[in-house]
Image (cartoon, rainbow, N blue to C red):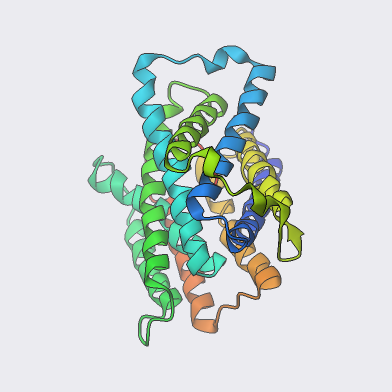
Length: 306
């Protein structure tokens, strides 16, 4: 790894902006009438085709598969590239984008807990402070002291996405040990696209929705953003950033994503958070930052593509 932290941080921040806008773009597509499984399948298929083309142009040999790799790749694809975005899309259809992303963003905390109790790795005491801060932050975001204002199904989908994203991190750490990140993600998107097409066959895809508009923008253009600038481009940026920054630093800098996502949703969708929710968001991000740096032995998973 070449130490060029400024360049690496710029790449992560840029990817965070692209991912953040992706939340609003995805919500506008869902508002146009496309359901979460259909959008998930469209995104996975488009990202797979784009990454496949990139692999074929740069180094086709990296796409070779072995029978022993298939279980990991299938599990990695179904978990991280089908179920995580599916639950995320359900969450943002019922919750403000920023809040849905905050629920999902507790995944690194779950990974740290898995490292402590599942893999029996030593962790620094700050993990428990991070856990307490994140739980307090989640309580603040949900405002549990009064009448629950957030949709229960949306909360469940966001937390479910966090659990599956943590599993995705664990699978990713194993996958990059034997395969480059680009081909790993390409095949994972491919298996996600295949599974999505089984659940939502392409001959039932609502193509007529692409001719409509949502939020004053053509739906086809929003879908293109979700695939190209909301998936492929930020993934490549974060992958490149890992050459210049350690994985922990990438994760911490990447916490700009929920901040940007909330800001974009506020500007485009008028999704306003109150003071208690903003304070809770700050606690969650602080807790995740402590969890990111709590493990003494860390592996480098491939970056998320939400």
